[in-house]
Length: 549
Image (cartoon, rainbow, N blue to C red; front, top):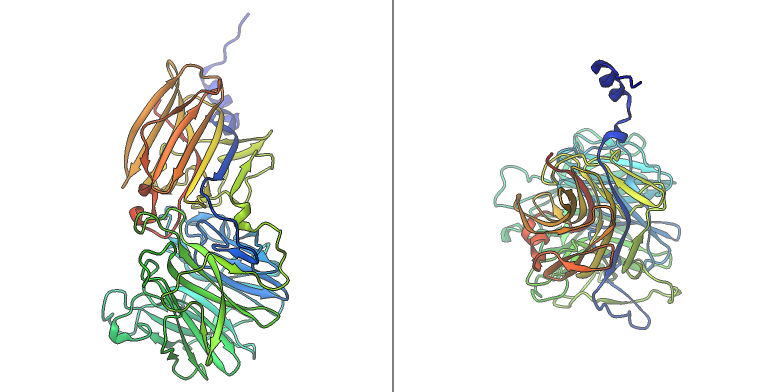
């Protein structure tokens, strides 16, 4: 004889069931990304730029013994501050992320291009330091680690240090300083008028010395010409000179790198008469543009190199791969550093340093194909989430990745069930296999620049089968541009996006191997930095969301 529980008992029982068992889910069995461009093989005796293709901007570099470590901006993505290591400046591998836990920082509710700006990494006396800015999320801070792979400390915040792009300089005598971008003294004289300031830092406490602030650079190389956005400062003590290098001109086509020097930090910095030492603004049709935000490094053999950001545009100044990390040898002439002569293009092929392995694949070469079967216990370092470190909505088990929807859309400011991998090539193919979706759930592939500019190729269960749809989000306006029905709701489907510079094609392959294009060709320019704004590159992502009941 059947027994029925009273209503209150049913409610109580439901409350005791783990949330994960009652929430809708979507499961992915694999993800695959392949470059589809015809990147030439590096010429004999050379390696190729960019060394870190895709959204790896504002590189900073340091060295411990014969190992180099490099860090990039990560803005509002988590984990943040990706760290790379290399023994030869050519072959790089990711060592980890410096921002890897919720106690360090949170970016809840921020736009994608806020958060972490222009870090500096330095090594001194057994300890690694990263100083950076959490824009709209706390300001400037320092974190430390004995091993760049982590763990890294919680931040020491620097409330006295305003602005962005802080640099940590530790002099030969152990005294430490912070140079940074901030507002100029007095009222700005023009739009983009900024200044570089200096504080002394107590290295043992990581506290600034009170009343030690002083002005280093007002405006830029020549304030009478109204230079804009002097930023990204780095100081070096080389021989008898202190050198200050900065980005100038704004981080777009007018970007450049300039340098100053002085005999003493208490004396004014003198600008180099042949500035800038790096720019592509005089080459508007170049395949590489926007060069700047450089940092210098000396090898144990005494050679000098510079890492910097640059972009690879198409169709004018559109680029989807973001600001990428490049490297070039740095030479010296009459006591001044030189990265690239005026008017010369950034070389794609760079001569190999001596004694570098010639047959070992570089990070860029390995990046041409990425496949994830989700066999690990958690997503790998290639996968980025939005805003905070909470990943209760993702799990990996039994060679599958499961997303539990959090929001009804990626347009909202809250963190969504989204994991994205950088687009690293102008032409590419990316696919994911969706093996299961619950009712009231949509899941699929996203080509994502930010919440207001992206495409979503999704699938969902509907009354008469499975629906596959393509959604375009332009300036926050959502349009479903295509939709089709698949008969069988139980079978796996493969979703694919193919990018070729300014175009994107979306398609679906059913369980029988039949492939259909979903909608017309779409404009890749929609998810370019030029159209969407900000400072990041596009990501190819996996996403699950709630749908209407």
